[in-house]
Every structure is written in structure tokens, then in C-alpha cells.
Length: 388
Image 1: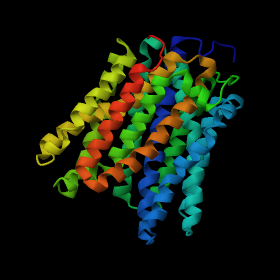
Image 2: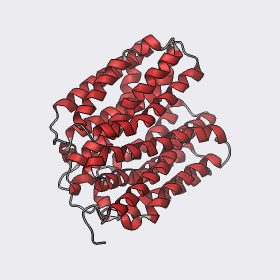
Image 3: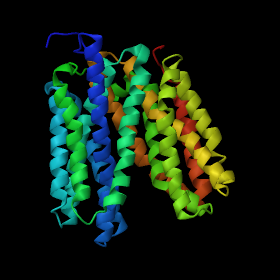
């Protein structure tokens, strides 16, 4: 298809192309978000020890980390639509296979494979969006992308709670989410950008292309995963009942989703780097209030709702900065590095927070996340970046 670097020749085609990939990531979110609780519930029901359940939970992230060094090369040689559809079809097949597997170790191996398959639509989808989006609207477009993904991610556990893990329905829904992600991409396959490139650097070089964005990705992964994994435990330790503690996670996600477009609107009208620094400082200032409001559920829900804007906003703003600062020919490599930083933060965050929490759950969680926010906000502030 003869076209510009984006592969799109008109504003109408640009809109259709962006709509397709934004709709696709909703299905990716369902498949991604359902897999974690489904694995934990099934393996716990089989009486597996916590370390085995933890290993199964870590398997997809480990697969993503293992494959990221070669994914930019693969993306350069496979058409974007083909790569996404291939990844989604393999993920759907894996969900179907899980239902018939009785071996826990086979489950862990298949969850590793699922992480590898989901990495394709993840890296290609984000690179696709950043290629197509105009810089004057980039953050708003990416906010829609983030809302679509996190909505799917949030719906996954809700569907699992409704349908349960005993029958086939949870596995059918997971496979259906993956197939749903492939459908709009197939329809818009001729509107995909041209991602062929000659990577001049590896992942380390990719990180150097946009260091502030990379720090934002790591901090986003650190805070998101720490909150998703540990916030209910922190709230219960602070005196909340279990049902209210779980509602804090809902407030966190809803707060992030409802405010992402506004945050994107601001990012398109001001310095994205300055806004990223402001988010870090706001988070650090607000999280220290958490011990003071845990005894008042309404105040705690309000605080976590606001914190959701910052926790989820780091990833969105970092991705917008990536598209702003990196040349189109290097976007796939830079995006792989960006995902590497986000995934690494998601592994390091709960690990460090969990260790610090042994000295006191509430104080440890607040200390770990506040210090991380301040350290990486300083990195963002002093990192080299191209002006908006």
C-alpha cells in the first residue's frame, strides 16, 4: 500500500485505523485481565501452594520480558494486522486448551505461552496508535486507548465472579476476548501503518531515545501493580472490612478511567513532561494521607479515586511522550523498551512493597510507593527530552 509513514492517506482513514486498534485493545484487556484471577482461583481450588500460584501468575510477565528483545525484529517483518491477529488467535487457542489441562505445570507452561502471544497485540497496537496519532491530539487518542484496555482488564474479573471457574464459560470468555480483539483489526487490515524499520539499537538504546517516558513507564508499572496486588491487604490491615477494601480497587480503576481523557486534553495543551512530574508529586503528596482516611471509608474511596488518575496516568502520558520524542522508524524498538520498563516496574513494585510491609502493612506500603514516586519523578524531571 503506497502511503505515508503512517500508511494512512486521509483523515477518514486515520480515524478508522485508530478506531480499529482502540476497539481491539478492549478485547486484549479482557483476555489479559481474566487470565490472572482465573489461574489463581483454579490452582487454589486444586490445593496448590502459594509459590506455585505465584509462579503461574508471573509466567505471562516473564514471557513478555523474554521475548521483548526480539519482538521489534518480528514486527519489522510481519504486517501489523497479521501480527495482532496471529497473537490473538494463539491466545484464544490457549484459553481453550487450559480448560482441558489437569497438570498444573502444563498450566504454567501455557500461561507462559499466553504471555508471549499477548505481547504481539500489545506492542504492535501501541506502536500503531503512536504512528497514526497526530501530535496535537496524541495524548487524547492514547487516553481512549488506555481507557479501552483498562475497561476490558477490569471487566475480566467481574465476568469471572459472575460465571465462576468450574465450568467452561470463563475459558470461553477469555478466548472470546482474544477473538474480539482480532475482529476490528481484520476489518481495518489495509489501514494499518507501515512498521517496517531497521532497528539501530537494542532495548537499551531504545530506552535512551526517551528516558523520561521510560521512567514514567517503570513508575506506572510499579504503582499500578502494587496497588492492584496489595491495596486490599493494606486497607484490611488499616481496619476496613474485606468488602470495603475490595471497593478501593474499583474506585482506583474507575477514577483512572473517568479522568484519562481530561488528563490527555491537558497533555495536548501543555508540556507532557511537566504534567508527568506534576502527577508524581501529587501522588506522593496524597498517598501519605492514606493512613489518616482508612478509618473513614468515604474519605478513603475519594482519595483512592483521585489517586487512580495518577496511577493509571503515568502509563498514558509516558506513551504519549514516547510518540512525541521518538522517530517513526524507531518506534517499535522504543515501544518494546517502554513495555519492558513497565513490566519490570510491575515485578519490582509488589516485591519491594511486600518486603517493606513486613514492618507494618500500612506504613510500609505508603513508604514504598511514595519514595518510588519521588525518585522516579526526579528522574523524569532531569531526563533529557524533546520539547512538546
